[in-house]
Image (cartoon, rainbow, N blue to C red; front, side):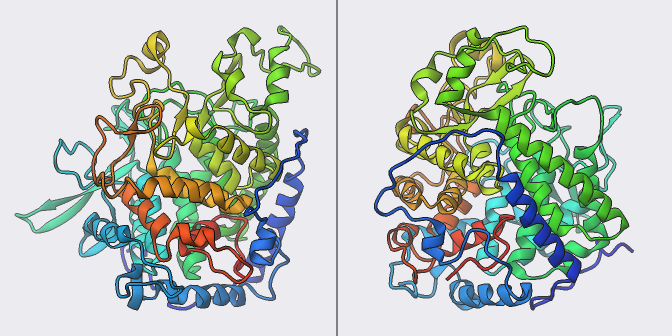
Length: 579
């Protein structure tokens, strides 16, 4: 019997880390320092607002501080410090009207946790995930399934609340599903593909339960999810960091699962780019929206997953081979993304003056982008100070649209340099009405419409302008924005966005998305009680009020525990970051 079929014991305490893992972490940090030297970057000076502080000032420690005397010791300090925040006796602020720091518990917390627990899915008596939505007013379609990408904010909420069991079960169950034969019509998918979602089927006659997975054969457009494997690796690292339990990641099955995912991504072929070629509909934007090629969301997730894998893979014969391949790919990927995906005012002007039909390695316009293809909106949208990673780059194509998730993950994973991260935050502040509006946060900007909408989306009635993926506003993106704000020392941006969200989410019954240029209207086909909107509410409102926490930064103040978890889960925050 495979060890996956039985119970995997929980440590219950923090394990000491092997010397090779400590060495891997130090090497990873050294490697990252070298990656933080871009080939060519904008040079900007920016006035900092009076409440904006660097992470050095907030924590009293550098961003990539020298390694503590022992990994276990630093983890104990982190867990001891947060123990009062998510100990079972005071989960989610239920048992006390005020938090231990004197702030009132946000009224949305109890309701959000109740809804999140009602969304739990059980398999043979064990919680294994959360369904996509609790809304029973419309046709369920696949909203009654557990999606890998949708479960991520739920998983972080449960981890921050000291409830890792459901995350562990989810990791193991999806790992079992990965080993299934994956066949669409008569074609076999790659061995390492993770499911987009799964469903628990109950047979009352036989009194049995089985799992049914969707690898793309039932999805809209029949596209396999590229992002599921990357989110799975990220959750494995988040679980390991949050609990201190390394035994799960060290299981032979988990090691093999990671290697299978990485084999798909690191395979050699005809590509001349280190980025991943992907179809439309392979990620959060799971319908045709013109992201075919090398979308920023996938490239940023790919980068983050590679960095997590560096610290999760064992240093055995197979693991060392993958570590070498990962390191080489990270160098190439970071150079490519920082050089060719980055745009600011100077770069925009350079593209505007590009010559075409250039040949040889000395070409400046390497992808033969025609200046006449520049959209009109980009000239007014680009601020004097600010920049971002464009949506896609490939031969004769540059998608200048803003994609929120890809840019936030680029910051969190250190794919963006410190200067680029600062510029992204400057852009958000400068273009607040366009990117945030009345309900955070635009998944894509701007919306495509008219004849272009017909061509790009195939006349998709759900993706009409300023709706759903086509310029809709998605509350789930708030946790990514908040973590990015904390990392870049711009808490006032997150505070301002949270203040907008908390006035609407509970009242509107936690909708999936909002419509309109400003996000003023609940989405025309948005599901209510959307689980990842609920989980996001737990993340940004949980424990001490996020707004109060953001307002009261000082050298001795404490983070809201969601910020601790969101940031500590990221690869570069593997040490205790609290003062």
